[in-house]
Amino acid sequence: MTLQVYAYPLTVTLSSLVNNAIYTIPLAKIMKVKYSTVTRPYLLKTLLPIAGFKAIALASAFFGLWKVPVSYAQTVKATLPIFTVLASRCLKHEPQRPAVYLSLLPIVAGVIIASFTEMSFNLAGLLSSLFSTFLHSFINVLIKKVFDDTQMHPITLLCVSSQLAAVILFPLWLLTDGVTLSNELIHGLKSGEQPPDFYFIFLLFAAGFVSFIQNLCAFALIHQLTTLSYAITNTTKRIAVIVISLVIFKNPVTPMNCFGMFLAVIGMFVYNRAKENEQGSPKFLRKRDSNNLTLKSSDSDARLLLSTTA
Image (cartoon, rainbow, N blue to C red; front, side, top):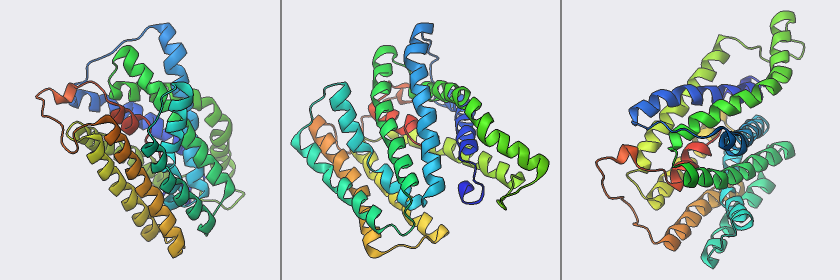
């Protein structure tokens, strides 16, 4: 909603990173997360690249949201499993079962149909959203390496990576949106766009707080549910976001466009189902553990807390 009125994608990106860094501190206390330390070389060689990719990926995601409707951006984000499979295959040489590759077909078909029938199609928005999704798949692989090396909790990694990403992004923001906002506040607008005001600041803080609540609720659920059951809730959430965005923003759509969107989203569930069968995990509920608030991180935690963007 912020980008629909205020055309400052890098400002929204920086605000999101800062909010994540701030709100994860009380979140870590609520979840009783143990503090983790890493060596300086590991910080520079591993965590810093993750933060850099995170900053670029998030900026690309918000730029895509600025250019294309929310419903279409959510559809493009459904391609994450495709890039994840490719990244795992190329970087970690992980083979996949035929069922996993076949499960990607609905995603490909859905995104193609949605793209060809999108009435508000924008090539820059599509490429930016795809690039963001590609980077997130690469981040997933690096995150798994961090968990294997350090046993760091995902909330700790979210906090550290957000802090570093904000520092990395700040110089670019200062030279772009920072200069633009300063000129508009001092000299006034020349383009007729909506100037930054208190409502803009309110939207930035509201978005950060809602993101914090989402992370809190999702992390509480992820330790009670298996990957499959979380995939069901995640698919439902994505469908709800698409429907709500269509209702609120009233973006023009066609029946084929809606079909492509939902085919891509359902494809994500099919992919998660195929991966669940491959791993042979329990289907719906995890075993209860009195210390479940301090359990070790899972791949689902990583995807949830570190690859969730706009």
